[in-house]
Length: 222
Image 1: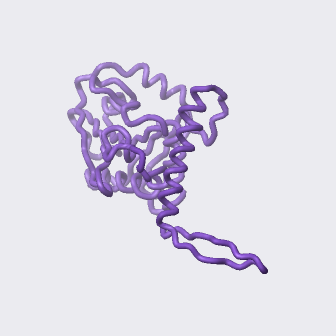
Image 2: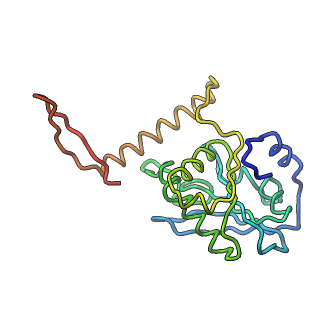
Image 3: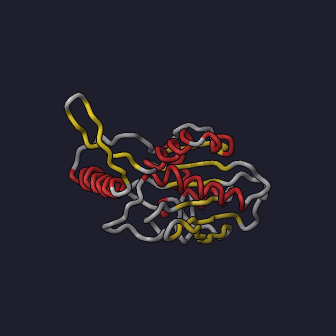
């Protein structure tokens, strides 16, 4: 199953086939992060297999971890837990049960997911499973781009990620509709503007000369 292929049809079939299940256990875990916490849903079989490589799942840009599970035991994460895997579904900062919630001055964006949140949750999972040294990564939609970016940025992660499986992941969305404009273009623009303002507030200005002209530039501290 985890061969790295982007086989969305297979995953959707697994999702459809997943049924209410009483042979799994669900627990919400909270990892301290900045001024709040990240929520991670741990879904596992009642009789865990200690040496089984766990799975980390990441949602897309417009959703949260509930896209993978439900309280009644439906969803891909529950299906995989029933198959014997320990599954961890994370909510990125501000989403789902992670706090603080997204608000007007919320400054955390996808950069923090790539650089901080994914490595943090990954190490958290490894600490809970001392008998294994790797974690499977699985993502839906834009979450796949974030996971791939984190792997590309941190070479040390590449040795401890057993596989990366994505479905519905793409770098651009070319559908033209009012719903797409509102949910993707408009909201992404607001998020980018908020992050840019927060980034500029941490920047140090300096003056650069080009011939007889002066340019005012900034360099971010991070």
